[in-house]
Amino acid sequence: MNNGLPPKPDSQTGKPRPPRAPLEPGWKSPEVKHKRGVTKVPQQPEGEGPILEWFFPTRGRALTFGLIMVTIMVAFFTWRDFGFGWVTVWWLWLFIVPWPSLFLLTGRNLRMSAGADWLAYGKNFVKTYELTKVNVTVGGAAHYLDIEDSHGKQLYVQINNLQLNRELWDLAYLGLLYSVHEGGASTNKMARDYLGLNIPPHLRKWESRDA
Image (cartoon, rainbow, N blue to C red; front, side):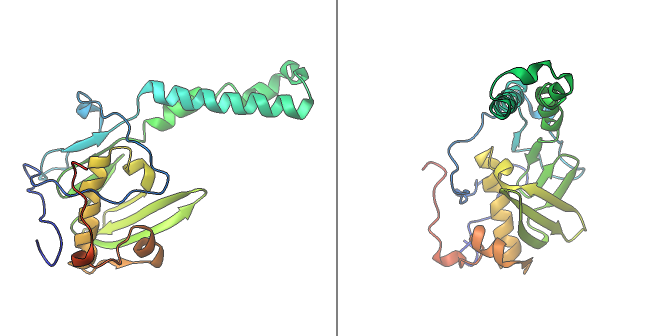
C-alpha cells in the first residue's frame, strides 16, 4: 500500500490487478468482452505496456438498439395519428429507417482499451497515473469523465461506457485515485462526489475483484 492506495499494477504484466472500482447507480452487468477482438480496438500507444482490457460493441448490440428506436418511433407516430395513417406519408419514414444504420456507425466510436497505466478511447488516449485534471460533467442523462494528463492529452467519455468492461474501469479508476491523491490533479465537486474521489484512501473499503 502507498498512503492507503493499492499498489500500481506492473506496466507489462498488469499484476496485481486493482480492486473493484465503484460503479454508477443502476449498473447491472458488464457486456461480453470478445476475447479475440483485441485487434478491433485502439492499440497500445508507442512505448506503452500491452493491452490488458478492451471493449467494442457487436453488430447485434447496435442493431438491437436501432430496432428499439424504430419501435419507439412507430409507436409515437401511431399514437399521434390515432392509427396507422402515417405509413403513407413517405417523409415520416426518414425518421424511422435510418436508426439501425446510425447505431452501427456510431458504435464504431465505442471502442476502448486500457493498459496498466493508460486508457484509450477511439483515437485518443491518456496516461491514467499522470492526470492533471479529473472532472465529471453532465450531458443529457449521462455523466461524462473529462480528464487531461501532463502531456496535454485529453479524453471526454461517458462513464457508463467505460464500465461496459468492469475490469477496464477498475484499471482506469485506480489511475484516477493516484492522480488525485498522489499527483494533486485538479477536480470539480461533481467528480469528488460522484466518483468518490474525496474519500481518503486509508478510509476506503476495498472490494476484491473476486467479489
